Length: 477
Image 1 (cartoon, rainbow, N blue to C red):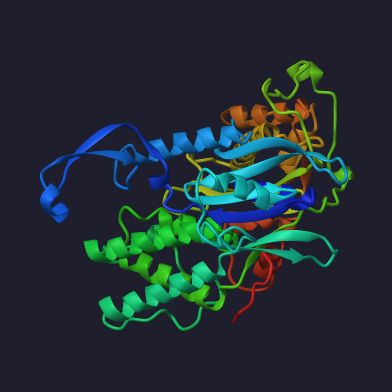
Image 2 (image 1 turned 90 degrees about the vertical axis):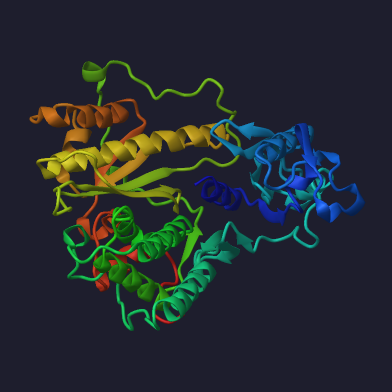
């Protein structure tokens, strides 16, 4: 999430993005404590002697802590401080010399992967190189970062934006799965054709096929882990399908294995999808979002702003969310599913597809639970943006396709008829009352959050919704 926010803000403020790899990361750090070892026979005449380990060798329990502390000291030396909302993000106030723009420079450090956002980003990485030597030739334009391919693209509106693609990871994963099927499973192959990630006639929670043996169960679990990372890298077009598969990891059956192979067959022919972090300000139809005086109900409530929030710098951003619920979608327990997508300007930065923890007895109740979960997530993102020093223009614009929920969150005079939904009802309405968010209606056919609550078969509806989130979906790329 932090990476996606940072890349969007970089494009919005016309900043450079550069990457590098730290060479022998742990070995560049001194040990925090004295550690002794006895030399083995490979040391020849010195075998049996005691030796003091002075560097954070890989495998030491304290190596990660030693590296983290040493890295923190070095970052503070060059003027960066950790973000209080994400300790892996380092921040420094900067003024761009050519136009006087005041903004925050960011350095994202995930162990040995460094990503710098600055008007002269290479200089930041070369300064860090004095403390932590970088791999030769690694300082430059980002190519692969955390498994995803990064590159800058120019959109149809002329705006330059950063794009993240999991295509290479997907291809290698599919190739690896096919190899394992050939070598370890008697020449079995992936299905020849899959137009969608999920078979239209399959209900995973009602599957009563034979339980997998330990070997096959481990194979299934490893594939679920691979799919999880694909979603994290941007393949949100199959977020619901992966969530359903993950819910059976404790006791997978033969039918679940067949389904996950069908999902990989879909990925084999639909591997090319890019998530573009478009910084363009969206066109928001203000007529869909109503404002009223809520003082009589909730008092003079205001959004709590952290006292230690950074001074806003750079261009402001808009926040939007599309939310949906699939009422009683799970046929075994009749629990509903929450799904939402959160956008920073026109860039998708966060998403969720998760089965609700309670059994709701109405569409109204399940939709309010979903919206409350979305509001909670938005509150965390708004906090993170403020701790990153990013200006927020106003409330978050929340769109849902249930008219009853929208009316109840837009109008103070509406009344609650179901006590069981009181917590979610008042939590969302209070967020609207304090100006933190506004709700508006969107047609079901245009609500991209449908992808996060239902398994939609291949066709025009699915293509239309996926097109709102990803670029370059094609059959044979």
